[in-house]
Amino acid sequence: MSDWQRLGPLTVFNFDVVFSEVTLPDGGIGSGGIKLCDAQFSEITGLEATMEPKVIKEGGRNFGAIQRVGLVTFATVVLKRGIGRIDDLWRWFELVAGGSYSKRLSAVITMYGPEEGPRDHPERKPIYQWRLHRALPTKFKTADFNATSTNVGIEELHIAHEGLEMPRAGGAR
Image (cartoon, one colour):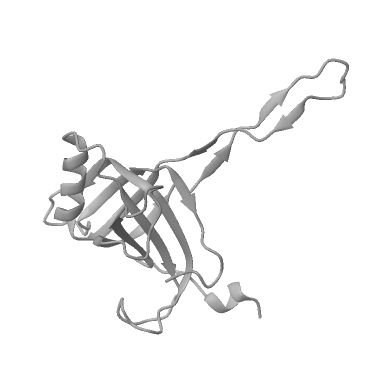
């Protein structure tokens, strides 16, 4: 049986996002980072990196251009339908929108397996982990106020960042 067959279906709110202060000069996540807030989301999109190759057209080379490594860009990460401390995330957005452009955070996104149990249960094992370096909130949308709705606290949080990293196996928390 493969690892994927053993995993079974991955359920909602198995994505944990922890925001910490940037503690290293290069914007990485240090071991002494200060955890500021965390939340769980039912959907995360935009974990994407794109390298734009440089094309070099060489005289006399008629069969195609030479391809070289170019600039890497990162997509905006969108966290959808989350539960957590809304006031902490809103305060971060408010600080950045108000001119505190240096208030960058590191974000660690962890996807957990299908084991049942509370969030801090030792049986709940991380499957994948992504790290966003020098994250910056660009959009904050709260759920609509509707007494008949089942919406959660954070509808969307858009995050721009300067680096995407996936730690090697066993590197997750």
